[in-house]
Amino acid sequence: MSLTVGLAIFAGAVATGTASYIRATGSEAGTIRERIGMESAAATVLGRAAEGLTVQAETEVAINGVTYRVSLTPTSQKVDLATDNETALTQAAEAVGIVVDSELARSATGLANLSNLLRLNASDEDCLRARFTYGRGGQSRSEGDRPPALTVAPGDQLDVRVASNVVPGTVLWMRARFLDQAWALHDYRRLQGVTVCETQGSPGPH
Image 1: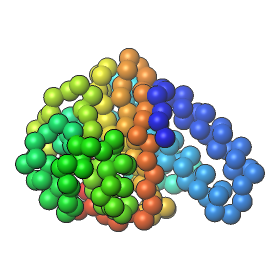
Image 2: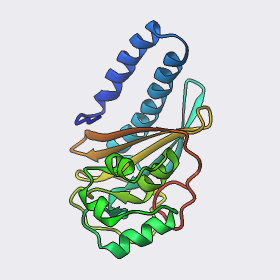
Image 3: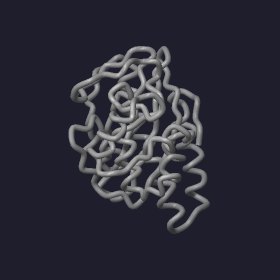
């Protein structure tokens, strides 16, 4: 699913999701409500950042009595599967306990496609996304640990991960690029059956 819009996408998603929710029953209704909650949590944090506020890289957002954990990671701190050397790819993959074939990585069209090519399960793809990227939004790679708090400027690009203890095992990933007071969102990926990704020195969520 590709999204190239500002934060208004979430308002539309909530409206559409609510209408569908009224018509849906059982597990469909739960899935719709879960998706709306996760998107709304992401929108809350991204909205604060768009206003020029400093936001925590790891923060909790309460929506309708559910607490969501939102993790923000600059893509500049991730290993680029398309351009970084094979040593960097191998070391980053070992840090999250997965094997990445560099030739497949170069030929893949995105993280979801690479996950399919490598036959990764949801947990392994979650680990893959915590460490790797395709493109850094034109920014050079940043070394060192992820900063505990972030203030965005036009052109900054973040990976957003949303999870909740109420819906254990379900994780929402999306990429957000800040463009003059609005966000362009893409790489929307919802994973189910995820267990904790134990990373070593990763800029992503632990």
